[in-house]
Length: 242
Image (cartoon, rainbow, N blue to C red; front, side, top):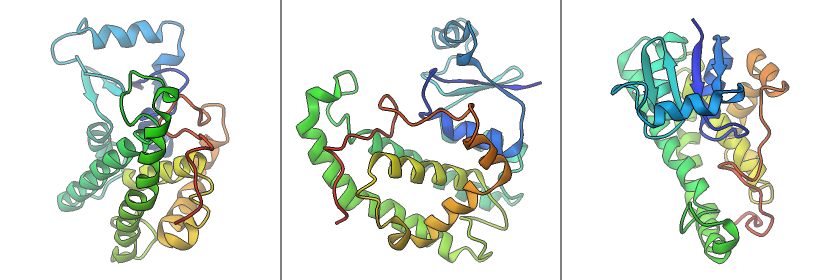
C-alpha cells in the first residue's frame, strides 16, 4: 500500500522534507494534492471528517494505512525506521530526531524573514520589518544554525560526511533541502557557503549525487522554489556576506 502525503499543491514547502525521504528510499507514495480531488480530500481531514485520531492541525501529514501522522519531524521520526533512514540504535534515533526539530526551528526562522509580522498580511505590507529581520537572520541565526550542523558532521565518529552514524539519515536530507533553499533565497549572502560551512557543503553535494535524489531533483515531481513557499527570493532582502 502506498503512503499518502497531504500538502498544499504547487509548493515544496514543508512537504518537501517528507518527499525527499520517500524519494531517497524509493517508497511508493501518492502526493494527494496533485490529484483532481486532492484538496477536498485534504480538507476533509483538517475539518475532522475522517475521525478523532485523524484530525491534524495543518499539512503536511502522512497517511499510512489507518495511521495519520502530522508535523514534519514527527512524520520523519515515524518513517525513519520503516525507510531505513535511521540507525538501529535508539540513542542515535533520538539524537537525529533532535536534529530534525532543530532544523524545524531553522525553517521557521527562514520563513519569518519575509513574514516577520503576520502570516496573514502580504509581504509588501511588512517589507521594512522583513529587511530588519532578514539582516539579523543572515548575520546571526544562519551562522548559529549552520555552524552547529557543520560541527555535528565534523565530529561524527564515522567520518563519512553525514551527520550521524554510518549512513545517510533523514536529517541529512533535510539539511540538504535547507541549504538548497538558502542558496535560492539569498544567493549573495550564501556566496561563501562552501568556505564558511565546508562540511555542510560536502554533505549537500553528497546528498545531491545520490542516485534517487539526483533523479528526483531532475524530474517533474520536484517542484521549483517559488515566491509562495518558505524560501523566497526577494533581491531587496539579500545582502553581501557579513
